[in-house]
Image (cartoon, helix red, strand yellow):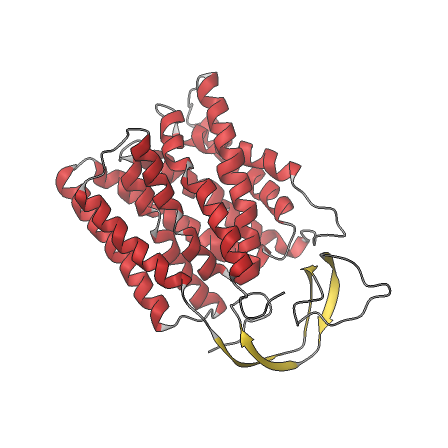
Length: 348
């Protein structure tokens, strides 16, 4: 593994995750038109659960979820698989898909802030400027929507609530990123689907047409289930804040798909906001961080390889490729480019 470019793999995984999720916003609006928000969320996460069941890894390849993970899992599921999707589904019924897609970029700002507060992830001046650009773009978008389409403002505020919920989900999920991502997706999706199904039944929501239900299930399987699995792998590779920063490309994918589907003509204000947001994302991606640092003794379990400069424990025979078991890290001091992954949680 090349220690000079520690974020390359994580950035690529996060970008693929962003593309898969970004395309869902206009598709959820299309298939979910006239469908109750609770029913929409339940179908999306039922589809995600199917993906989680299919992509679970063998126990020798990935660490299993444990009882002590339950509080993190419940908190992440409540925010990310219940509150977030419901708020987004309602918002998409009261705002244009392209504007809502761009509003989702704010998830990166909130996630980076939470990662800084709770995990001490580094935030250089470039990162702070990037977040300001993203926030300014979203503010411009909100101002434009408030002037040109008064009905959109409440929908966009609902989408804003979804971004806050998903940012909290990202922060909670960071503690689960060393577990099997397929198992985590399955657990989160089942909890989210169960919660929103109960709410749909309680509120007497009507069942959708089979075409709409099938469409939402498929969108959930790919845009939520597979995308979430990749997102967790990216968090493992280079931290919660930077994963969210790269994932901020998702709204641009959504906006482009919405325009392509004829849902919006793309006003000058919308594209001005998009330009500011894209500038912020680009600044995130060009960050480089390297200095002398010390690894304290650490014992944990996760999938790992032995060519990354950090896993030097011995095996007889040495396994080939990624494998998982509980292992110990001895104290180590060295300098190389790094990102705030599970082995670089030192303060700055």
